[in-house]
Structure formats: structure tokens, C-alpha cells
Image 1 (cartoon, each protein chain N blue to C red):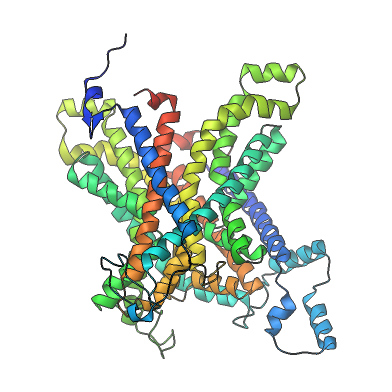
Image 2: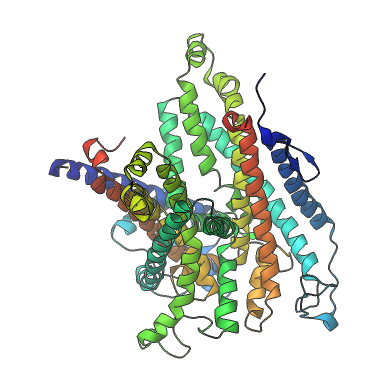
Length: 284
Length: 329
């Protein structure tokens, strides 16, 4: 029997836990926070306005303060984060789909591989934010434009990873065997290659998410897409720009801070999931 | 490296550059052509015209020309250096871009240098004292700043330094009522400080993290152990064995960050209303100024390519190991 390390039995908060349990607990807690933000953002009704309470400092009643129409900034922030998360979800789904298709397509032959590499290069040669603006203008702006702009431009890192993985898998004997047996390329791609890259895809998606949300916030901050009455986090921040010189710091500080925390949580989840899925670190 | 190899290297890069530029030009043109922007209505901006005049304008802008012909004409114009006329500025696109780019280049170059120097220094200090308080502080800072939207960092800096401390003006490249050519150097500089500070603070995180991790790896290697056993220690050890090894990849990484630098400049210029290329790009996108936007996309692609090229050159020219082996794939 393998001797367990001594600190496995160490007390961790309430009960003894090893690194694996800790990792899972961290993932679960972070996910819980994000899911609860998402759900509560969905159920927040129209936030009541009261001009009596306009521009109040953060207090116990309004922990994030109130804006110029007396709306509670905490509720607005949560609703905005919910909206941003939703855009992030859709955009990541689109991006993942593209990178899986392109990654598997690169396995077909040398020409396909070069083509995929060329498309990745093309997308990487334009600064990301300009590319998003370009795509969202192409779709006519609005919410749809933003979703597509963010979704169609975030697939490059994952596609690059998949392409190099595919290259390695292609040299394996069972792939040669399948080729010699006359199996089609699509069959090889879906039966031999796809199952082996699932863990990369999962990690890639989770790490793609924070980028998608940040870019969504940036693009709405610049004024593309979401209309002013949709309280996405970028819209809230760009509104608060007008009140900076009046000294209403809480209008900008708290929404940005909560966005930062959400992004950090995603990074956290991504890193820990990677730890679990990577066989080298999973057994530590 | 002999002359022949240098020629081969630059020839290869030149061909790549041309192919890439043509691809970017066609790609961005098709994207914008697919968009529902109607050039005639954008040009008119809601002015009332008769049907006949509208038809003349449609003929002028060539709305009914098939797409391949349009692309061909656009490429031909591009080769001659004619990027069209901006609809917002009513001036040739090339002039507008050159004017705005010079303002941005100052901002980007300064913050590029600052973020590189400070980031590298922080990374070395953190890596040398691994596990210490300063290492933890650098790590926390880097994690936080990489997750923070750069425009929000800009807003916080604006709030602290311009609104509360009143050390710097709130925005604009030059004071209101003064044309940009008349502004004194001090007026220019005082408006450059905060955007540069923001871009540097945001940009130093990746380079600091990279330097830190690399230095820790180098310091745990066998030859450093040997050097330690010979009696080298402290700063000399880091200088002789660490920095020599990590400086070059760090420089390369910094050159590769041109794309993010441009993206950061777009957002930061918007926050500080600095009249650079980023703000112009946003205005062009929002007001459907297609020629100007296409021009900016092309120029930014050139900018990113130059960054990548410099990274390659720095690698090939400085690293003796790569000099020996062939380049290109």
C-alpha cells in the first residue's frame, strides 16, 4: 500500500481533507456563487426608482449605493452580471463549437491543417477588440451583434491547442490502423480523436469564459450593442463615467469590482478543474 | 548568420506579410460588406433627397456592383495607397489615420517600455524571493489586474488622481480651445501621464508573472545548484545565471503583446478621451464610417505584424542557439 502523506490528515476548516477534496470543494463553492448570481440576476424585476434616494453613498440599506435615479446599485449590478454571464455562455458555446469543428477538420489532411492554421493566423493578426467590433458591426450591432462578435472570435486559443493535440494523436498506431482498415476520416475524427481531447475542451471552455465576459463588458462599455435600458455591466460602467467628476465613486467601483470577482472565480474554477483532469497533478 | 540567410529570412517574412495583408483586407471588406450598413443612407445622415439623386449616389458608391468586383476595386485602390474618404472627418482616411496614430504611438510606446521594465523588475524580485511577502503581493496584484477590465482600472485611476487629488486634468489630448499644434509640451505631457500609467499597470502583469515563473525554474536547475555550491549567492547569482537566461524570452513576449497593447489603448483612450487611434476606431464603428474603420483595421494588422516580426528578429539575432539552426517551418 502506498503510504499516505502526513498532511492528508490535517484538519481543513471542519474536517480532514486531502488536496483532491479541497479542489472539489473550491470548484463547487465557486460554481455555486456564479450560478446564484446568474439565477438571481434573472429574477430581479424592474428596479424601483426613487429620486428622493438619488446618489446615496453606500450604506447598510443600499450596500452598493444608489444611482442618479435612486435605483439600488447592488440589484443593478447583479442583474447586469446575470446578463453578462448569459452573453458569455452563448458566446462560449459558439466559440467551442467552432474550435472543435476546426480542430477535428485539421486532422483530415495536410491541406486542411494548413487552412486551419491560416485562419487562426488571420484572426490573430487583428487586435482582438477591433475584430469583435468588426464582427458585431457585420451582424448589425445590438445584442445579437455583441453575442456573435464575442462568440466568433474567442475560439483561436482552444483551436490552437486542439490542432497540436490532433497532430500528436495522428501519429499513433491505432489511427494508422484505422486508416489502413479503410475507415473514413470523419469516423476517425469522432471515434479516435474527439474522446481524447475532451478534457482539453472542458478546460479550454472554462478558461475562455472570463475572456468572453471581459470582452463583452468592454464592447458594451464602448457603446456597441446593448441599449442603455438593459443594465449590462458595461452599460452601468459607461453610465458611471458621466458621474466620475461629481465624485460618485461607488457607481463605478462596485460594479467593476464584482465583475473582477466573477472573472477571478472562473479562473479559479478553470485552474482547479485542470488540476483534476490532468493525470499528472490529479493524484497529488 | 550570413547575408544569404538574412535575405532568405526577410524574403520569407515579406511574402507572409503580403499574403496576410491581402487576406486581412479581403476578410474585413467582406465582413463589412455583409453588414446591413447602407453607404448611401450613412452618407446622407437622414437628409431628404429625391429618388433621382439617390440613384446617382448609389451609382457613385457602387452599391449594386457584385462583390468580387468590389473587392478587386478595393484592392487596386489599396495598392495605390488610396483608402477612400472618411465620412466623419470628411478627409482622406490615410491622413486621419496618420494624424491619430502618431498621438497613439507616443502613448503606446511609453507604456510598452514602462510595463516591460517594471514588469521585468517585479518578476525578478518576486522570483528571487519566492514565497516571501513581496512575492505574494506581486502574485495577488498580477492575478487581480489580469481579471480586471482595463477600462475600469482607468476609471479608478482617473477618479483618484484627477477627481480627488486634482493632480492631472480629466481628459482630452490638449486643453479645450487650444489646437493640438499650439499646445505646449507640458500640456501634452500632463494629459499623457494617466493613460500611460493605466496601460503600464495593466500591461506589466503578464510579463511579471512570466519572469517570476521562469526565474524560479532557472533557480531550481542543476547549474544554479552547482554555482551555489561554488559559493555564488544573492544578487550575483541571479544576475549571472538567472537574468541572462530569462531576459530574451521576456523581450520576445513583450514584443508579442502588441495586439493586447492596441486593445488596451482603444479602451483607455475612450476613458481618458485621448484623441488617438483607438477613440477614432470606436467612433468609426459606432457611426458606420466604413472606409475609416477598414483603414484602421489594416493599420492595426500592420502594427501587430511588426510586433511579431520584431519578436522573431530579437530571437534570431540575439540567441546563438537559434542562429545555428535554420528558421522558418
